[in-house]
Structures are given as C-alpha cells and as structure tokens.
Length: 402
Ligand code: HEM
Image 1: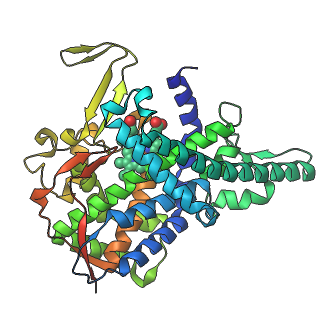
Image 2 (image 1 turned 45 degrees about the horizontal axis):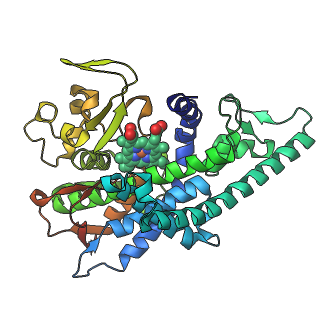
Image 3 (image 1 turned 90 degrees about the vertical axis):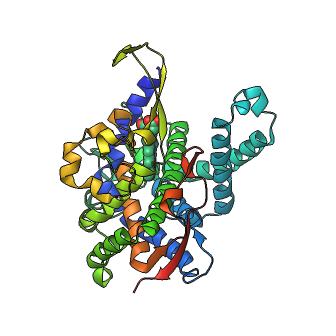
C-alpha cells in the first residue's frame, strides 16, 4: 500500500477517536493536570524574578497527552521519569536534525552523539510503552474472553464495528470513564483488521509528538500576549470568573461559553502560530494562478505570513485584537485565511482536544493570577525549531488575582 493510501485508511479509523463525547471524557484528566501546573506556579506568586511560562505549560501538556493516550495512571508507573526524559531527548534530537542540513545524511547522523542518545532514549521509551500496550491488550483479550463465555452470541459491537463489552456498555455510552486512546486502538477496526502492536505504538508516539510541544508553546504564547495586553487580560479574566464562580466543575457547556477566551486563543494562534510552516506534496498537477505545479512537488505553506496578510486581516493585521474572531468578521473572511491547524482531510486531528485543553489551562491561570511582563509586544521576535518559538523566553510575573 502507498504511504498516502495507508494514511487514509488509518485516518478514517482514527477520526472517531476524537469525537466530542470522547473529548469530554478527558475533562477530568485535563483539570487534574492543570491543577498540578497551578500548584507549581503558586510558589512563584509575587516573585521579583519573572518565570518562563513554557517551563510550566510543558510538563502539563506532556502529562495530558500521556494520560489520555496511555492511561490515567501511566505516570505513576515504575520507569516514568526515564520515559519522560527519553521522550524529551527524542523530540529534541528529531527537531535538531530537521533544522540542521549537515545532519540529514544517515551516515553522518549515525556517527553523532545525538544519534546514540536518541537510540538509547528510544530503547527506554519503547520498553516502557511496550509494557503498557501489552498489559492493555491482555486486559482487552481477557474481557473479550469473559464476554464471549457469558454471552453465546459473542461480543457486542457498536454501529461503527467497535467492540463494546456488555459490562462496559453503560460507561461507554455515557462516557463516564475517560476513553483512553490505546484502549480505543485495541477495539476499533482498521479496515476490518485490528491494529498491530507496531501500528498502535506508532500512533501513540505520533500523538505525543504532535500534541505536546504544540499545545505547551501555544499556551505560553497566549500567556505572554495576555501579559502584554492588560485590558484583554482583564476582560478574559472577568469572563472566566463569571463562568467558574463557586468553583463549578468544567463541562462541555462551560468550555463552550468561554467565547472571549476562545477568541484570545485564536488570536494568539493567528499572530504566533506554532505550526507556522508545513508542507504538502502534490499528488497531481495543479494550477496556482499562472503557475503550473507538477505532480510530486513539495509545497511549503507559510501560515505565519498568511495570518498577517492585510488583504484578509485589514489594516490592523499586526495588532493583537481578539475581536478579529467576532462571528460576523469570521463569516466575512475566506475560511482558509486562518490555518493554525492546517485544513482539509489532513488537518490536525487534535484541534478540538487542543482548544479544550488550552481553555482549561488559560482559564485556571486567569482565575488565579494577573500576568505582567516587561517585554513589549513590538519586541516579539520568532525563531523556528520543530514548531515556531519566540527568540527569547516567555517571561511573565505572577500576581494574585483578587
Ligand atoms: C495548539 C496545538 C496544536 C497545533 C497548532 C497543531 C497543528 C497541527 C497542524 C498544522 C497539523 C498538520 C501538519 C501538516 O499538515 O503537515 C497537525 C497534524 C496533526 N496533529 Fe496537531 N496541532 C496541535 C495539537 C494537537 C494535539 C493536542 C494532538 C493530539 C492529541 C494533535 C495531533 C495531530 C496529529 C496526529 C496530526 C497528524 C494528522 C494526520 O496527518 O492525519 N495535534 N497539527
């Protein structure tokens, strides 16, 4: 099967694993991870020295993605520290190679200390996830056996052909339990066949790589932009205070009601898109204005430039203004003028997961703190790693919000 065909089959199988009810089942995990982040930030309230927001958002999003893909207790297992450190090495070294042409040839890379460190880290990480996946598969097979024994009609399947166990039916339908990604990969059919161990492993690592640094960096960008724009910050904090009064628990409805915060997040993704450039290979000849692009060419989309084009965003394209995302303005704009998550069938599968987790992170930060910074907006300056970063740290001071 060609790579593209294989991707299409897998993507079709994976799309339902990000449906609204599954995402809602992650809310308790998101809330718990954010609670720990706030606990860590609390120690720095009133500090003279600013903190680097990324150092707080990164562990939070890593924990979210590990727990929603491998299970709620995955980071309580033996070897978790080595696993986290290993992941950091792999993600760092892959990024380093992507942006260093000298390291492209395999024979060069394989003779570097980066390669050796990456291989050691991979061994540790794969041993850790292999164990989790094998245990999950054993649990799955045991439940399957019990269900077949107690029900001569065999297992039950939902309308998508996914296996549903009788004792779990109620929990599944009501999504009371978080629907962990690895459990779903074991139950969903992939073109009629179950996913193999290697395919499951690949999908887990794709999720971790795609969903961790992106969300952490975007959250840090949003915090810095809020610190630079106190009026916007106060308005977002007022919305949060009203919606989260009396310490209500997060629900889908509450998150949906955070309309101003959503505009803030979208505006931060417009001006500071972490996926600022991505590529596409043409699968046929295409005509782009007067240019004919032959099949097999790689095109790079410069989303950073697109998001600041005055033609779409008006004379204030470079200004931070969440009202760029007022519904009537969105309606009047070309839908592809804004592509932080890419678009079309190959767009980000985790975009709604990201928005939910960002809303919970930012709403808790705004509920607890007033953010300030000495960095002026005009000095914002970027550099590319795997994703787009600032060329300096996200330095912010925390004051209690009363
Ligand atoms: C602010 C956060 C995020 C941003 C800005 C972002 C952005 C993107 C973009 C632009 C792409 C398309 C890349 C390309 O076409 O080359 C993409 C793909 C992808 N993203 Fe995200 N992402 C974010 C968060 C997440 C999260 C939280 C997850 C998982 C839970 C995730 C999972 C994925 C996956 C699996 C793909 C590959 C999809 C495919 O090829 O079928 N992303 N993301």
